[in-house]
Image (cartoon, rainbow, N blue to C red; front, side, top):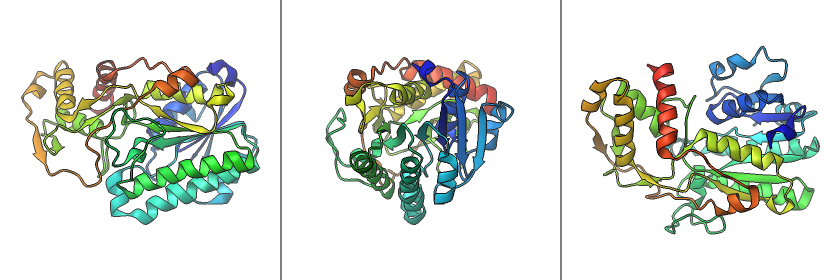
Amino acid sequence: MIENLRNKTVLVTGGAGFIGSNLCETLLNHEVRVVCLDNFATGKRKNIAPFLENQNFKLIEGDIRTLDDCHTACKNVDYVLHQAALGSVPRSINDPITTNDVNTSGFLNMLVAARDAKVKRFVYAASSSTYGDSKALPKLEDHIGKPLSPYAITKYVNELYADIFGSTYGLDTIGLRYFNVFGQRQDPNGAYAAVIPKFVQQFMDYESPTINGDGSYSRDFTYIDNVLQMNIRALTTTNKAALNTVYNVAYGERTTLLELTTLLKDYLSEFDPKIKTVEIKHGAQRAGDIPHSLASIDKAKTLLGYDPKFDINKGLKQAVTWYWKNLK
């Protein structure tokens, strides 16, 4: 699969971020040339520090909101993995203008640059937030609801733009609707930290994590290695029917927030028994949050051969071990 990319050049936008840096590492480990474009607004230099001495790695410090930076990054590139974005529903509610500038205008800049550079394929990070107020479970790619946040709107607009660039300009695109990705290098700090690394850090500091609501909300938590597999499959598929569409990227099982915190306490207590005594707090429900999220991954399995290996238990064990070694 990934061997087909050897000696090719892949641009990873947002390559210093959580998912982006894991993609860079995976590609470099298989002798793929990698160009990383990042403005370090949310990405971390430490995430890519191990790659800087690799002759197959090139860093371009730039911003997807600047078209010239996008053109520079796409020059002589075979494929694009577009991960750059401003994530977080609350961030978008607090600052919809910046979220739109990065996620919509920046995305359009990248599409234009990729088209002009005649890249072979443009694979981009979409989002499960696109399902909005749809109550149907599991989530099917062709059935979405009304977006519940500015962030969700921007990610849906990305899909519409990608579709147009496919039909109008012949640019092959694949959108990957990520469902609550977690794993190594995910930042536990900041106002918009993802729930798993944030809770892990709090448990390790003997602080009580706060669940928004009663803890019954559920998510299809997806370990990073499943996401890496899906990106590589999207880049390398030779199935024409698999192009110019979107896919759910998940495991296909849901876990409530209460269940999640129980698992985290159990796994972390193996390193430090005192963590078992940390209690959980409950706060107000967060605006823009959907109650439940569960993906159908049948389309990805059928068209791309997606075969996720990490369920929530296996993924959390891997992640907690990494967090303990690197965050403690």
